[in-house]
Image (cartoon, rainbow, N blue to C red; front, side, top):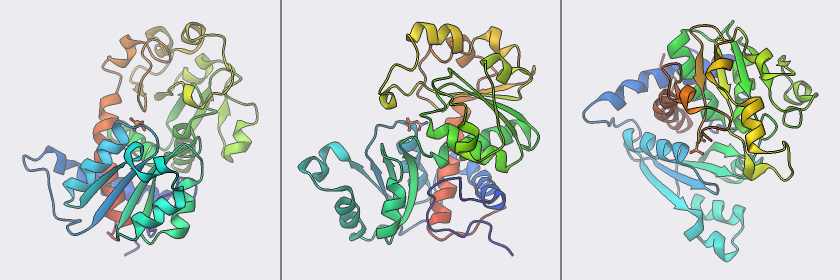
Length: 314
Ligand code: CP
């Protein structure tokens, strides 16, 4: 039988085929049930070691990778960069090679610079999983978003998905654009012109619609994905003020009413309530933001399982 995911590393969605993506999602669906058990543990990764190496802050991704490893019975180690020898000037590659010398099976890495997971993959014997690299990719976020959409809409092909906000700095947007277009969704993006370059379509190499107004992206959409304003990656004033951003680009119930009646709302978190999304929308029945977090554990279980040698489960 074909094994749709044959890789050691998960560095991004860009290089994956639709079959590989579906293989990861199918495997994640199979792992979902484990988190509903009273004893949330299976022995699938007993004896394996997973290191979480996060150079940037994280609540959802780091916790869910740790829980995913533990629910599969792997030994999970979290490196806090602020108390590691990075603070003494150790380089990224020296840090990675020293961790590698302790024979982990997988290193999950988040870094503010694009391409860091790719660099580590060249020197590490462990599988490298990208937990977000700068504005480049956040592959497990796109996978958990896809799983959330699949669970609620049954399929992704043919859906209209609006991605709204800070497209320029968003690794979530890039990974989602790769994934959703590969699986046959119609993707529209919108945001301030400074955050959605005219040539964005060519930058990501996919067919997508760049809309001049967020209303154009949202009208008739099945899925509305709102992005966080990435203030930590903005070295210039891309819009006059947060208040004006909220007025012109925030997702309110009025704007959401332009989407299909059964449209769902996604946000990767952390949310800036009252800026890119109103609390009314974030807390409404159309919001699946906490479902995304729930499916994040199953997706990361699947990714760790496959990266350490498991075969896809369908
Ligand atoms: N969505 C996401 O990556 O959240 P964290 O930064 O909390 O991990």
